[in-house]
Length: 536
Image 1 (cartoon, one colour):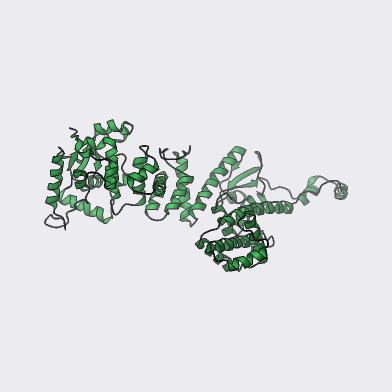
Image 2: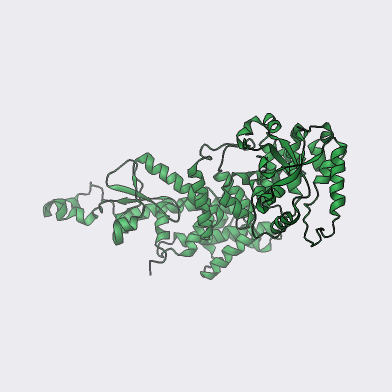
């Protein structure tokens, strides 16, 4: 009962997609919009229903096929089709109209199906995805099948043609049915392109077959590596295409796909799904998508570091140490396990913070009564010029501050040389203005000039000559990069000022460096960010 005929395969799927070659009469007839009857007399406005159905029957007969009715529960959705096409869509106008039409007149336009046996023979690796209770697999008409199930209709018309499986013709039909819809969203397009990718086609071949540019194919394929919640965010325009692509690249989720350039060992794990979900939670808190990804990746790396060293992770250091938490904080990372040291994940950066279980003694305390030294011993210690002076918390803070500054300036120099968009430059200049930071300071221009000279994107010998050159510059991109470098330098000089506590502008500056990639705040910087709002 296969009904297999060569008539439906006279042209290739690629020709059908591009409109080349001799058209397939039956597929052309079935590819029109679904007929929904909304008028009281059973007519569909603007459509001669009887004529359309007669044409379908005629074309089926021309290739030796016929229209029959089968039970809806004998039909299984095509495993390669987007699952969304087989789900009810309550509240969506076109879906409601379709269901209401089917309730009134049944399904009018036949579905194109193949037998389960033929499908499994063509795709033996997908046999487990076709229920044994199904006799047929839907190739064309998934939405009508879903509507019939919703409407409670027992039987619907189908055309059975196993030859559609030849040369991937069923895949062409799936893509053709869906990509021509006016309500197709990015995720559904991603699912359709993956139909070809999962069969081993290259992105170049997919682009040629689907009539799209190769980068468009690559980006949409990446969307298949998102958890359902992230895909919904893309469909609802809550997550942009490029941000979603970056998320999928950094934290791919799901089984390895043939079209992936590289497979991630952790991508098909519950932990990876949790990481993507954590990114979405951060985005909902107004964290930029790129920063959210970096935050989650940093936490993963921090947990691995703590496990490698053998440190116990504390969920809430505030609850553990109370108001004395800062007295327990250590600014230097331990190199090995220590029973007196625990770690915690910083909420803002995802980096590790370290705490002493017992508060370390101060220098004064170690030289006093608690140390067991006599007055004579203390006196001799202060006059012994050969003994090195003990390190103080102030010494440690100065050392950590310098190390943090060095890392920031390396990242800022690289970012300054790259330049930025006009929007990002404007946002930073506005932020600087709000905090009354002047960008005409000679020190800022000197630092920016140094950065650009080191990157070999500026050949002016002195900062003063460079500033004059920028004032006369006619190329908008060159001017934009110069001002971006000066704005970053202004932020850096402000963050380096040890006589003032950090504020939200310093935190925003670190966000800019982090979003550019290759930079993560040090423990000292994370400590300054945590203190924002607590220092008068």
